[in-house]
Length: 372
Image (cartoon, rainbow, N blue to C red; front, side, top):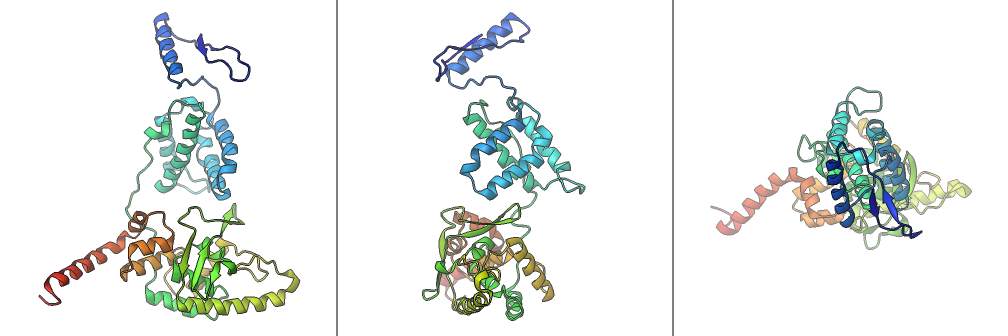
């Protein structure tokens, strides 16, 4: 029997039975270890709570502290990729081997869309991130003495850089904007994305009150996101995401024309107009659905015969062209809203060789003059 601290609510003495040891000596050794853990404040009573039960408790507890999209993502990944595999295991029995076995299974057979194959290493690493946070809280709450995810080995990336990043050249981007100008009501939004590097949700959440067209500035204060495919208004995730972006003259002129066109649409809709003050909205003023907006962009690019890219690649294209043109990486970081300059440099490392070559020639010219 192990003596614990008194119950903080009742003041009664608390004791815990531990049994099942093969010999008296083993029981005495275990008792000594348990007394040491109590004295050091790391004792965890044996519990039958399973991983699935703790996951449900954890999700309910963090609901007020995380963004709706984050909660949905955590819930979905735990439901699809953790609970079916280790949900019935006792929480206290989970160790690094348990998690490594889970990751191997997910890599081999983790897809839930009835297609053959497993999850990508990147997706499995995200599952590891969620599990690590959940188990860290389990340790903080006194359910575990340590976080087994600290010793686990999630799959490493099989490639460096950003393999999915495909961007248009400046000429291809110009072709797209010229082709969409008179045929697509979303053209001003495409233009803003292409000339600022904004994220999709930032552009779709932009309000007229956030724009100062006289000063050529846009303040990013609101975003549009989808949670379980439903549109919701939110705010930037980080302080760096709340930023002001300077606009070029062409974009400012396009936004002025767009404001006139939107005012005309509003008059036609009349009482059916829903005023969210959004710069880019449906014809009735309600927020555009981000996923449908992306599909509209892809369809327009296909019609114009351009290489297939994602809408998000307009952001990558802006950053790539800016860095290649000699714009300082710190400026690029601030316009993109990255948390640190290292993220910018790592994401666009493919531009580095050209920058290094230009730097070598620039410094050599200072030392040796324009001619050798």
